[in-house]
Image (cartoon, rainbow, N blue to C red; front, side, top):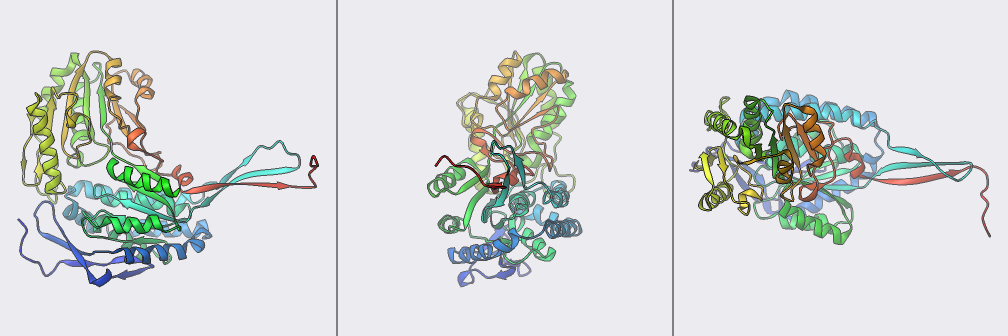
Length: 491
Protein backbone atom coordinates (compact mmCIF):
# COMPACT_ATOMS: atom_id res chain seq x y z
CA UNK A 1 0.00 0.00 0.00
CA UNK A 2 1.01 3.58 -0.53
CA UNK A 3 1.94 5.27 2.73
CA UNK A 4 0.65 8.60 3.94
CA UNK A 5 1.97 11.73 2.26
CA UNK A 6 5.66 12.21 3.11
CA UNK A 7 7.00 15.69 3.77
CA UNK A 8 10.67 14.83 3.20
CA UNK A 9 10.22 13.72 -0.39
CA UNK A 10 12.29 15.69 -2.87
CA UNK A 11 10.68 17.59 -5.74
CA UNK A 12 12.66 17.60 -9.00
CA UNK A 13 12.48 20.20 -11.76
CA UNK A 14 13.28 19.58 -15.40
CA UNK A 15 16.60 20.76 -16.87
CA UNK A 16 17.11 23.01 -19.89
CA UNK A 17 19.83 25.48 -20.83
CA UNK A 18 21.70 24.63 -17.59
CA UNK A 19 18.72 25.79 -15.53
CA UNK A 20 16.37 23.81 -13.30
CA UNK A 21 12.84 24.85 -14.22
CA UNK A 22 9.36 24.22 -12.92
CA UNK A 23 6.89 22.87 -15.43
CA UNK A 24 4.25 25.11 -16.89
CA UNK A 25 1.67 25.97 -14.18
CA UNK A 26 4.06 24.35 -11.64
CA UNK A 27 2.54 20.92 -12.32
CA UNK A 28 4.21 17.83 -10.85
CA UNK A 29 3.51 14.10 -10.70
CA UNK A 30 4.35 11.47 -8.11
CA UNK A 31 6.71 8.51 -8.42
CA UNK A 32 6.38 5.62 -5.98
CA UNK A 33 8.82 2.88 -5.01
CA UNK A 34 7.88 -0.43 -6.69
CA UNK A 35 8.78 -2.52 -3.64
CA UNK A 36 7.36 -0.54 -0.72
CA UNK A 37 4.81 1.61 -2.48
CA UNK A 38 6.15 4.64 -0.61
CA UNK A 39 6.22 8.02 -2.28
CA UNK A 40 9.69 8.42 -3.77
CA UNK A 41 9.64 11.81 -5.51
CA UNK A 42 7.58 14.56 -7.08
CA UNK A 43 8.75 15.47 -10.56
CA UNK A 44 8.01 18.30 -12.97
CA UNK A 45 5.14 17.36 -15.29
CA UNK A 46 6.53 18.97 -18.42
CA UNK A 47 4.27 20.27 -21.18
CA UNK A 48 4.84 20.89 -24.86
CA UNK A 49 5.81 24.47 -24.00
CA UNK A 50 8.51 23.12 -21.68
CA UNK A 51 9.75 20.77 -24.40
CA UNK A 52 9.84 23.76 -26.76
CA UNK A 53 12.15 25.56 -24.35
CA UNK A 54 14.41 22.50 -24.10
CA UNK A 55 14.67 22.15 -27.89
CA UNK A 56 15.40 25.88 -28.17
CA UNK A 57 18.27 25.52 -25.73
CA UNK A 58 19.70 22.54 -27.60
CA UNK A 59 19.37 24.28 -30.97
CA UNK A 60 21.11 27.43 -29.71
CA UNK A 61 23.94 25.39 -28.21
CA UNK A 62 24.55 23.22 -31.27
CA UNK A 63 26.83 25.48 -33.38
CA UNK A 64 29.21 26.10 -30.49
CA UNK A 65 29.27 22.48 -29.33
CA UNK A 66 29.88 21.23 -32.87
CA UNK A 67 33.08 23.32 -32.94
CA UNK A 68 34.27 22.40 -29.44
CA UNK A 69 37.75 20.89 -29.38
CA UNK A 70 38.19 17.19 -28.61
CA UNK A 71 40.36 18.13 -25.64
CA UNK A 72 37.49 20.07 -24.06
CA UNK A 73 34.96 17.32 -24.79
CA UNK A 74 37.31 14.73 -23.26
CA UNK A 75 37.79 16.88 -20.17
CA UNK A 76 34.05 17.11 -19.61
CA UNK A 77 33.47 13.37 -20.05
CA UNK A 78 36.31 12.58 -17.63
CA UNK A 79 34.94 15.06 -15.10
CA UNK A 80 31.51 13.42 -15.38
CA UNK A 81 33.13 10.03 -14.77
CA UNK A 82 34.76 11.36 -11.59
CA UNK A 83 31.42 12.70 -10.33
CA UNK A 84 29.67 9.38 -10.98
CA UNK A 85 32.37 7.53 -9.04
CA UNK A 86 32.01 9.96 -6.13
CA UNK A 87 28.18 9.69 -6.12
CA UNK A 88 28.20 5.94 -6.85
CA UNK A 89 26.45 4.70 -3.71
CA UNK A 90 24.01 7.61 -3.55
CA UNK A 91 22.74 7.17 -7.11
CA UNK A 92 22.73 3.38 -6.74
CA UNK A 93 20.31 3.70 -3.82
CA UNK A 94 18.11 6.02 -5.89
CA UNK A 95 18.06 3.41 -8.66
CA UNK A 96 17.10 0.65 -6.25
CA UNK A 97 14.32 2.68 -4.67
CA UNK A 98 12.86 4.17 -7.86
CA UNK A 99 13.15 1.21 -10.24
CA UNK A 100 13.34 -1.87 -7.98
CA UNK A 101 16.79 -2.70 -9.31
CA UNK A 102 18.67 -4.75 -6.72
CA UNK A 103 21.40 -2.80 -4.97
CA UNK A 104 24.09 -5.03 -6.52
CA UNK A 105 22.82 -4.32 -10.03
CA UNK A 106 22.44 -0.64 -9.19
CA UNK A 107 26.08 -0.42 -8.07
CA UNK A 108 27.09 -2.32 -11.22
CA UNK A 109 25.27 0.26 -13.33
CA UNK A 110 27.14 3.12 -11.69
CA UNK A 111 30.52 1.46 -12.19
CA UNK A 112 29.63 0.84 -15.82
CA UNK A 113 28.53 4.46 -16.30
CA UNK A 114 31.80 5.74 -14.84
CA UNK A 115 33.86 3.40 -17.03
CA UNK A 116 31.81 4.32 -20.11
CA UNK A 117 32.30 8.04 -19.62
CA UNK A 118 36.01 7.47 -19.16
CA UNK A 119 36.26 5.48 -22.38
CA UNK A 120 34.12 7.95 -24.34
CA UNK A 121 36.72 10.61 -23.62
CA UNK A 122 38.87 8.76 -26.15
CA UNK A 123 36.15 8.48 -28.80
CA UNK A 124 36.32 12.22 -29.46
CA UNK A 125 39.79 11.65 -30.96
CA UNK A 126 38.64 8.98 -33.41
CA UNK A 127 39.10 9.93 -37.10
CA UNK A 128 36.28 12.13 -38.38
CA UNK A 129 36.54 10.81 -41.91
CA UNK A 130 38.67 9.02 -44.47
CA UNK A 131 40.75 9.68 -47.56
CA UNK A 132 39.01 8.36 -50.68
CA UNK A 133 40.48 7.06 -53.89
CA UNK A 134 39.71 9.14 -57.00
CA UNK A 135 40.04 8.75 -60.77
CA UNK A 136 40.48 12.49 -61.20
CA UNK A 137 44.09 13.69 -61.54
CA UNK A 138 45.58 16.26 -59.17
CA UNK A 139 42.70 15.72 -56.73
CA UNK A 140 42.38 15.06 -53.02
CA UNK A 141 39.07 13.38 -52.11
CA UNK A 142 37.91 12.96 -48.52
CA UNK A 143 34.78 12.01 -46.60
CA UNK A 144 34.21 14.02 -43.42
CA UNK A 145 31.68 13.34 -40.66
CA UNK A 146 29.60 16.32 -39.59
CA UNK A 147 27.15 16.37 -36.63
CA UNK A 148 23.44 16.52 -37.40
CA UNK A 149 21.98 19.01 -34.92
CA UNK A 150 19.60 18.25 -32.07
CA UNK A 151 19.03 14.64 -31.02
CA UNK A 152 15.85 13.66 -29.13
CA UNK A 153 16.62 10.64 -26.93
CA UNK A 154 13.91 8.50 -25.33
CA UNK A 155 15.35 6.64 -22.32
CA UNK A 156 13.79 3.62 -20.53
CA UNK A 157 13.23 2.75 -16.88
CA UNK A 158 15.11 -0.56 -16.90
CA UNK A 159 18.85 -0.22 -16.47
CA UNK A 160 17.81 3.40 -16.17
CA UNK A 161 21.09 5.16 -15.46
CA UNK A 162 23.40 3.31 -17.83
CA UNK A 163 20.83 3.41 -20.64
CA UNK A 164 20.21 7.13 -20.19
CA UNK A 165 23.92 7.80 -20.57
CA UNK A 166 24.09 5.43 -23.54
CA UNK A 167 21.40 7.54 -25.23
CA UNK A 168 23.48 10.68 -24.69
CA UNK A 169 27.18 9.91 -25.03
CA UNK A 170 27.30 8.95 -28.72
CA UNK A 171 25.34 11.93 -30.09
CA UNK A 172 27.17 14.35 -27.79
CA UNK A 173 30.60 12.88 -28.59
CA UNK A 174 29.75 13.24 -32.29
CA UNK A 175 29.06 16.97 -31.79
CA UNK A 176 25.27 17.00 -31.43
CA UNK A 177 23.20 18.44 -28.60
CA UNK A 178 20.55 16.34 -26.86
CA UNK A 179 17.11 16.59 -25.30
CA UNK A 180 16.41 13.54 -23.13
CA UNK A 181 12.84 12.38 -22.47
CA UNK A 182 13.09 9.80 -19.66
CA UNK A 183 10.44 7.20 -18.88
CA UNK A 184 7.74 8.48 -16.56
CA UNK A 185 8.33 5.33 -14.45
CA UNK A 186 11.90 6.39 -13.61
CA UNK A 187 12.34 10.08 -14.43
CA UNK A 188 14.98 10.59 -11.75
CA UNK A 189 17.18 7.59 -12.57
CA UNK A 190 16.67 7.79 -16.35
CA UNK A 191 17.20 11.52 -16.77
CA UNK A 192 17.47 13.84 -13.79
CA UNK A 193 20.55 12.15 -12.29
CA UNK A 194 22.24 12.43 -15.68
CA UNK A 195 21.43 16.15 -15.78
CA UNK A 196 22.82 16.68 -12.28
CA UNK A 197 26.11 15.05 -13.25
CA UNK A 198 26.28 16.98 -16.54
CA UNK A 199 25.67 20.26 -14.75
CA UNK A 200 28.37 19.65 -12.16
CA UNK A 201 30.81 18.48 -14.83
CA UNK A 202 30.36 21.81 -16.62
CA UNK A 203 28.83 20.85 -19.96
CA UNK A 204 27.91 24.11 -21.73
CA UNK A 205 24.35 25.40 -21.51
CA UNK A 206 21.97 23.57 -23.81
CA UNK A 207 24.24 20.64 -24.71
CA UNK A 208 22.35 18.21 -22.44
CA UNK A 209 18.71 18.88 -21.53
CA UNK A 210 16.14 16.68 -19.75
CA UNK A 211 12.36 17.13 -20.08
CA UNK A 212 10.15 15.05 -17.75
CA UNK A 213 6.42 14.40 -18.07
CA UNK A 214 3.56 12.77 -16.22
CA UNK A 215 2.28 9.24 -17.05
CA UNK A 216 0.32 9.23 -20.28
CA UNK A 217 1.57 12.69 -21.28
CA UNK A 218 4.42 11.77 -23.62
CA UNK A 219 2.44 12.67 -26.77
CA UNK A 220 2.83 16.47 -26.69
CA UNK A 221 6.55 16.13 -25.92
CA UNK A 222 7.01 13.83 -28.91
CA UNK A 223 4.93 16.19 -31.07
CA UNK A 224 7.35 18.99 -30.28
CA UNK A 225 10.33 16.83 -31.25
CA UNK A 226 8.80 15.87 -34.57
CA UNK A 227 7.54 19.33 -35.47
CA UNK A 228 10.86 21.04 -34.87
CA UNK A 229 13.18 21.07 -37.88
CA UNK A 230 16.19 21.45 -35.56
CA UNK A 231 15.59 17.93 -34.24
CA UNK A 232 17.33 15.82 -36.85
CA UNK A 233 17.43 12.39 -35.20
CA UNK A 234 15.20 10.34 -32.90
CA UNK A 235 17.11 7.97 -30.60
CA UNK A 236 14.97 5.34 -28.84
CA UNK A 237 15.86 2.66 -26.33
CA UNK A 238 12.51 1.01 -25.79
CA UNK A 239 9.85 -1.33 -27.11
CA UNK A 240 8.71 -2.33 -30.58
CA UNK A 241 5.23 -0.79 -30.27
CA UNK A 242 6.64 2.64 -29.47
CA UNK A 243 9.34 2.23 -32.12
CA UNK A 244 6.80 1.59 -34.88
CA UNK A 245 4.93 4.79 -34.05
CA UNK A 246 8.09 6.90 -33.86
CA UNK A 247 9.65 5.39 -36.99
CA UNK A 248 6.48 5.99 -39.00
CA UNK A 249 6.40 9.65 -38.01
CA UNK A 250 10.11 10.06 -38.56
CA UNK A 251 9.85 8.52 -42.01
CA UNK A 252 7.23 11.01 -43.13
CA UNK A 253 9.46 13.88 -41.97
CA UNK A 254 12.74 12.32 -43.14
CA UNK A 255 14.22 12.42 -39.66
CA UNK A 256 16.87 9.85 -38.94
CA UNK A 257 16.27 7.20 -36.27
CA UNK A 258 18.38 4.90 -34.12
CA UNK A 259 16.35 2.16 -32.43
CA UNK A 260 17.58 -0.24 -29.75
CA UNK A 261 14.55 -2.42 -29.06
CA UNK A 262 13.58 -5.56 -27.21
CA UNK A 263 14.40 -9.17 -27.88
CA UNK A 264 13.12 -12.71 -27.49
CA UNK A 265 16.61 -13.97 -26.82
CA UNK A 266 17.43 -17.67 -27.27
CA UNK A 267 20.08 -19.67 -25.42
CA UNK A 268 21.12 -22.84 -27.26
CA UNK A 269 22.67 -25.55 -25.09
CA UNK A 270 24.46 -28.40 -26.91
CA UNK A 271 24.75 -31.84 -25.35
CA UNK A 272 28.54 -31.76 -24.93
CA UNK A 273 28.39 -28.87 -22.46
CA UNK A 274 29.22 -28.99 -18.76
CA UNK A 275 25.67 -29.10 -17.40
CA UNK A 276 26.46 -27.33 -14.14
CA UNK A 277 28.05 -24.45 -16.08
CA UNK A 278 24.99 -24.31 -18.34
CA UNK A 279 22.69 -24.12 -15.31
CA UNK A 280 24.65 -21.25 -13.76
CA UNK A 281 24.71 -19.37 -17.06
CA UNK A 282 21.01 -19.92 -17.76
CA UNK A 283 20.02 -18.79 -14.25
CA UNK A 284 21.95 -15.55 -14.59
CA UNK A 285 20.77 -14.89 -18.15
CA UNK A 286 17.12 -15.57 -17.37
CA UNK A 287 16.64 -13.88 -14.02
CA UNK A 288 19.17 -11.06 -13.75
CA UNK A 289 17.25 -7.85 -12.85
CA UNK A 290 14.15 -10.07 -12.53
CA UNK A 291 14.03 -10.50 -16.32
CA UNK A 292 13.58 -6.78 -17.00
CA UNK A 293 16.52 -6.32 -19.37
CA UNK A 294 16.17 -6.44 -23.14
CA UNK A 295 19.13 -8.88 -23.14
CA UNK A 296 17.59 -11.46 -20.79
CA UNK A 297 17.27 -15.07 -21.93
CA UNK A 298 13.63 -15.71 -22.89
CA UNK A 299 13.92 -19.21 -24.38
CA UNK A 300 16.33 -22.06 -23.65
CA UNK A 301 16.73 -24.56 -26.48
CA UNK A 302 18.55 -27.66 -25.29
CA UNK A 303 19.50 -30.97 -26.87
CA UNK A 304 17.30 -33.77 -25.62
CA UNK A 305 20.17 -35.95 -24.37
CA UNK A 306 20.81 -33.63 -21.38
CA UNK A 307 17.33 -32.08 -21.10
CA UNK A 308 16.18 -33.91 -17.95
CA UNK A 309 19.45 -33.42 -16.07
CA UNK A 310 19.61 -29.74 -16.96
CA UNK A 311 15.97 -29.04 -16.14
CA UNK A 312 16.17 -30.66 -12.70
CA UNK A 313 19.28 -28.72 -11.74
CA UNK A 314 17.94 -25.49 -13.28
CA UNK A 315 14.74 -25.66 -11.24
CA UNK A 316 16.66 -26.46 -8.06
CA UNK A 317 19.04 -23.51 -8.52
CA UNK A 318 16.20 -21.14 -9.39
CA UNK A 319 14.44 -22.04 -6.17
CA UNK A 320 17.43 -20.75 -4.19
CA UNK A 321 17.14 -17.18 -5.54
CA UNK A 322 16.12 -14.79 -2.77
CA UNK A 323 13.31 -12.38 -3.61
CA UNK A 324 12.37 -9.22 -1.76
CA UNK A 325 13.68 -5.79 -0.83
CA UNK A 326 16.05 -4.50 -3.53
CA UNK A 327 18.09 -2.64 -0.88
CA UNK A 328 18.97 -5.95 0.79
CA UNK A 329 22.37 -7.06 -0.61
CA UNK A 330 21.21 -10.70 -0.57
CA UNK A 331 18.19 -10.04 -2.81
CA UNK A 332 18.44 -11.43 -6.35
CA UNK A 333 14.81 -10.97 -7.44
CA UNK A 334 13.45 -7.48 -6.82
CA UNK A 335 10.04 -6.04 -7.71
CA UNK A 336 8.55 -5.62 -11.17
CA UNK A 337 8.29 -1.95 -12.15
CA UNK A 338 4.46 -1.61 -12.01
CA UNK A 339 1.36 -3.60 -11.08
CA UNK A 340 0.24 -3.44 -14.72
CA UNK A 341 3.51 -5.12 -15.73
CA UNK A 342 2.94 -7.83 -13.11
CA UNK A 343 -0.52 -8.45 -14.52
CA UNK A 344 0.81 -8.77 -18.07
CA UNK A 345 3.42 -11.32 -16.98
CA UNK A 346 0.93 -13.37 -15.00
CA UNK A 347 -1.74 -13.25 -17.70
CA UNK A 348 0.70 -14.67 -20.24
CA UNK A 349 2.00 -17.34 -17.86
CA UNK A 350 -1.52 -18.48 -16.94
CA UNK A 351 -2.62 -18.38 -20.59
CA UNK A 352 0.25 -20.72 -21.49
CA UNK A 353 -0.60 -23.06 -18.59
CA UNK A 354 -4.23 -23.16 -19.67
CA UNK A 355 -3.00 -24.27 -23.11
CA UNK A 356 -0.93 -27.15 -21.73
CA UNK A 357 2.32 -25.57 -20.54
CA UNK A 358 3.88 -26.83 -17.31
CA UNK A 359 5.26 -24.45 -14.66
CA UNK A 360 8.15 -26.11 -12.77
CA UNK A 361 8.58 -23.22 -10.35
CA UNK A 362 7.18 -19.75 -9.82
CA UNK A 363 4.08 -18.78 -11.83
CA UNK A 364 2.94 -16.61 -8.94
CA UNK A 365 3.56 -13.22 -7.38
CA UNK A 366 3.43 -11.42 -4.05
CA UNK A 367 2.53 -7.81 -4.73
CA UNK A 368 5.05 -6.62 -7.30
CA UNK A 369 7.47 -9.49 -6.68
CA UNK A 370 7.01 -12.05 -9.45
CA UNK A 371 8.81 -15.27 -8.57
CA UNK A 372 11.20 -16.73 -11.16
CA UNK A 373 9.27 -19.03 -13.45
CA UNK A 374 10.36 -21.91 -15.68
CA UNK A 375 7.88 -23.17 -18.28
CA UNK A 376 8.01 -26.23 -20.53
CA UNK A 377 5.63 -27.68 -23.13
CA UNK A 378 4.61 -24.18 -24.14
CA UNK A 379 2.51 -24.11 -27.34
CA UNK A 380 4.29 -22.38 -30.19
CA UNK A 381 1.40 -19.96 -30.68
CA UNK A 382 1.29 -18.83 -27.03
CA UNK A 383 2.03 -15.15 -26.49
CA UNK A 384 4.79 -15.95 -24.02
CA UNK A 385 6.52 -18.07 -26.68
CA UNK A 386 6.63 -15.22 -29.19
CA UNK A 387 6.38 -11.82 -27.52
CA UNK A 388 8.85 -10.20 -25.18
CA UNK A 389 7.49 -10.54 -21.66
CA UNK A 390 9.51 -8.29 -19.38
CA UNK A 391 9.78 -10.44 -16.30
CA UNK A 392 11.49 -13.47 -14.70
CA UNK A 393 9.98 -16.06 -17.00
CA UNK A 394 11.87 -18.44 -19.30
CA UNK A 395 10.61 -21.12 -21.69
CA UNK A 396 12.61 -24.37 -22.02
CA UNK A 397 12.27 -26.70 -24.99
CA UNK A 398 14.12 -29.79 -26.21
CA UNK A 399 15.45 -30.46 -29.71
CA UNK A 400 17.43 -33.32 -31.20
CA UNK A 401 20.04 -31.63 -33.36
CA UNK A 402 22.00 -28.36 -33.57
CA UNK A 403 20.21 -27.62 -36.83
CA UNK A 404 16.82 -27.86 -35.10
CA UNK A 405 18.16 -25.56 -32.38
CA UNK A 406 19.11 -22.91 -34.92
CA UNK A 407 15.67 -23.11 -36.55
CA UNK A 408 14.00 -22.74 -33.14
CA UNK A 409 16.23 -19.77 -32.25
CA UNK A 410 15.21 -17.98 -35.44
CA UNK A 411 11.51 -18.65 -34.98
CA UNK A 412 10.50 -15.13 -33.90
CA UNK A 413 11.08 -11.80 -35.64
CA UNK A 414 13.20 -10.45 -32.79
CA UNK A 415 16.95 -10.44 -33.21
CA UNK A 416 18.78 -8.68 -30.39
CA UNK A 417 21.06 -11.14 -28.60
CA UNK A 418 21.59 -14.89 -28.28
CA UNK A 419 23.83 -17.47 -26.67
CA UNK A 420 25.33 -20.84 -27.55
CA UNK A 421 26.77 -23.05 -24.79
CA UNK A 422 28.95 -25.93 -25.94
CA UNK A 423 31.93 -28.04 -24.96
CA UNK A 424 33.24 -27.76 -28.52
CA UNK A 425 33.73 -24.01 -28.86
CA UNK A 426 34.62 -24.30 -32.54
CA UNK A 427 31.31 -26.03 -33.27
CA UNK A 428 29.43 -23.21 -31.51
CA UNK A 429 31.47 -20.60 -33.38
CA UNK A 430 30.47 -22.24 -36.68
CA UNK A 431 26.80 -22.04 -35.64
CA UNK A 432 26.98 -18.40 -34.52
CA UNK A 433 26.59 -16.66 -37.92
CA UNK A 434 23.43 -18.67 -38.56
CA UNK A 435 21.63 -17.07 -35.61
CA UNK A 436 19.58 -14.07 -36.76
CA UNK A 437 20.64 -11.71 -33.99
CA UNK A 438 22.82 -8.64 -33.64
CA UNK A 439 24.81 -10.35 -30.86
CA UNK A 440 25.84 -14.00 -30.50
CA UNK A 441 27.63 -15.00 -27.28
CA UNK A 442 29.49 -18.29 -27.26
CA UNK A 443 29.83 -19.84 -23.79
CA UNK A 444 28.54 -16.72 -22.08
CA UNK A 445 24.99 -15.56 -21.32
CA UNK A 446 22.68 -13.52 -23.52
CA UNK A 447 23.21 -10.72 -20.98
CA UNK A 448 26.69 -9.68 -22.03
CA UNK A 449 27.98 -6.19 -22.69
CA UNK A 450 31.20 -4.32 -23.36
CA UNK A 451 31.47 -0.57 -23.68
CA UNK A 452 33.30 -0.54 -27.00
CA UNK A 453 31.23 -3.30 -28.67
CA UNK A 454 28.63 -2.52 -31.40
CA UNK A 455 25.47 -3.10 -29.36
CA UNK A 456 22.23 -3.41 -31.32
CA UNK A 457 19.76 -5.74 -32.99
CA UNK A 458 18.39 -6.85 -36.34
CA UNK A 459 14.84 -7.39 -37.63
CA UNK A 460 12.28 -6.29 -35.02
CA UNK A 461 14.99 -5.57 -32.48
CA UNK A 462 15.91 -2.33 -34.19
CA UNK A 463 18.69 -0.78 -36.22
CA UNK A 464 21.75 1.32 -35.64
CA UNK A 465 24.51 0.58 -33.16
CA UNK A 466 25.64 2.13 -29.91
CA UNK A 467 29.25 2.81 -28.90
CA UNK A 468 32.09 4.06 -31.17
CA UNK A 469 30.49 2.86 -34.40
CA UNK A 470 27.38 4.81 -33.55
CA UNK A 471 29.26 8.05 -34.23
CA UNK A 472 28.39 7.37 -37.87
CA UNK A 473 24.68 7.07 -36.99
CA UNK A 474 24.76 10.50 -35.38
CA UNK A 475 26.54 12.33 -38.19
CA UNK A 476 26.42 13.00 -41.92
CA UNK A 477 29.34 12.21 -44.22
CA UNK A 478 30.31 15.09 -46.48
CA UNK A 479 32.32 14.34 -49.63
CA UNK A 480 34.96 17.01 -50.27
CA UNK A 481 37.03 17.21 -53.48
CA UNK A 482 40.02 19.53 -53.77
CA UNK A 483 41.50 19.99 -57.25
CA UNK A 484 44.89 21.55 -57.91
CA UNK A 485 45.31 23.15 -61.33
CA UNK A 486 42.54 23.50 -63.89
CA UNK A 487 40.25 20.66 -64.93
CA UNK A 488 39.37 20.02 -68.54
CA UNK A 489 35.72 19.79 -69.62
CA UNK A 490 34.04 18.27 -72.74
CA UNK A 491 32.54 21.62 -73.80
